[in-house]
Amino acid sequence: MAKRRKLHEISLEDDIHYRGPLSYQGFQILGWLCIVMLFVAVLLKIEARLEQNYAERFTSLSNTLQVISSMSLPFLLVANYAKILDNAEGYKKQLIRNGGAAAGIFLAAFILYHRYVPVE
Image 1 (tube, one colour):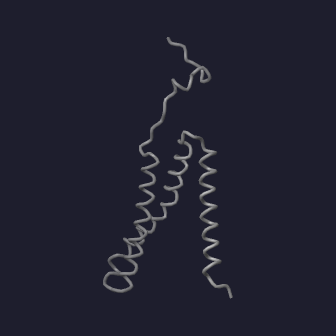
Image 2 (cartoon, one colour):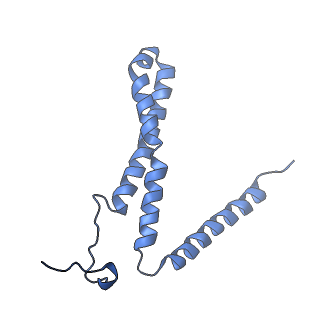
Image 3 (cartoon, helix red, strand yellow):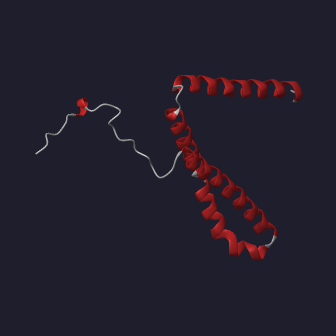
């Protein structure tokens, strides 16, 4: 009978790599599809307000699409987390780059807001 190897005796080269059913790109696609479903739900609600005969038919579909669309944020967060962990250059550089980009977008929006929106 073969002797069982201890966990600390196994190198990283011999370790198995788990490949889930979806990559980060699959989660991104699901997240964006959920956002599209939110847009379709909004269009159905607008149509239901304009035409009363559509209101009975599409109320349950609109509610279902809104519930599904609430899953967009978790799907996109999982995709971003997987992308950060899988990056070859390290997560610190990527977090600094993304943080800098977010700060730049905030600064540009702040400057544009205070430049073109009159404050009374």
